[in-house]
Length: 475
Image 1: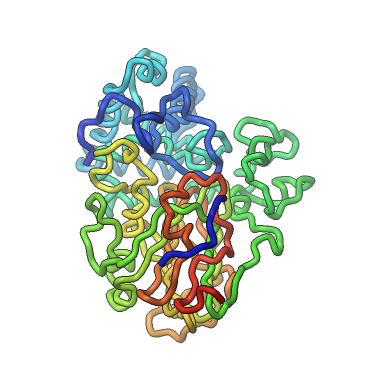
Image 2 (image 1 turned 60 degrees about the horizontal axis):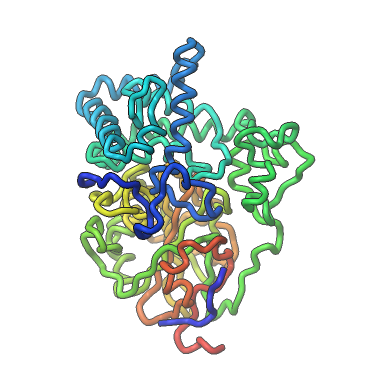
């Protein structure tokens, strides 16, 4: 990407037109929703999700009509029973469906025509039973490769509108509901770790619909510099999850610069946002108040205080790219833990502007509320550095691995060498932050100008320099 090496210090009533990131000159419709820039994970575009959801919804409706729809799996049956027998949650789920359907009725005539169901009704989700039937279909198959925004994140495509409604916001911020929904996500995760999930990596039929080994997937960079054997079943992987975690070939991502003065990017990331003079505590849920250190660190004041007045860089990870985390420096890992949180919660009120209906616009917010892995390192020259790896939507699992890198409060710091693998996400798109102490480092210009690089066609390579110790910029 074109990056300089220089450094520098609740939804309101929606408008009728389609929502889109950007200005009115580039409004997204069903006709221009894809293909996309691979590596640019942007699930807030409602009409890209429609291209994904409508065929799935119609497929299930057809199977139901001819009596071939598979029964709900045990976990989904239990989940539906739990919702149905708890009136508050049944109310929220029903209201969420109704509000999503009310929203699509406000759209222009051409778009309404495209999302009609087989009975001619303009609906996003057909009804209460359909909600569970679609979820059931999603968790019994592996994510498909496609050229829409929903590549690799089918559940997000299904929930894209409904989870940003007033009822959806209430539902997916509720701890009790999240504990029940986690069982559904865990069941899907279990399936994705079995050989049955390799149906879209079939070397006998590489061009089958949704194939991750198709020519289109290869053009999108799914296999570029990644370990694989095209002659082996599953390209050498024993499950969809192991494919999702595919590593780079040796030496594909060298860590650049000088370990004594440089900090590197530990994830393969596309820039999203930068902020300096970060506050210890803010109303992070309010528009344009982006980061609150106390909440980013899960209320652990002693660690949050270290970074007051410092700098935050945030980037996102496409579902088509590398999802392992690597240590960004030579030094010590002084604290690490997995902070539990939400899965499909979005920023309250984010539907108030075009381009903020769902998804990527909530990335700063998700750093405060979503499930995430938090690492705090100490570097000899650059001070304390934090890496926060944040699950988004389907990506509900953050794994610190090997276990030696789980450093509890009061434990001895663990020596670390940059480039060492320290954990990974499991399936889907995700986001991460790097946080630096005040007056310790100068960030690269591309990181400071992160917003300008949001549409870069390729992510910043893991191992790239992101920061240099102050006073050593010309070394």
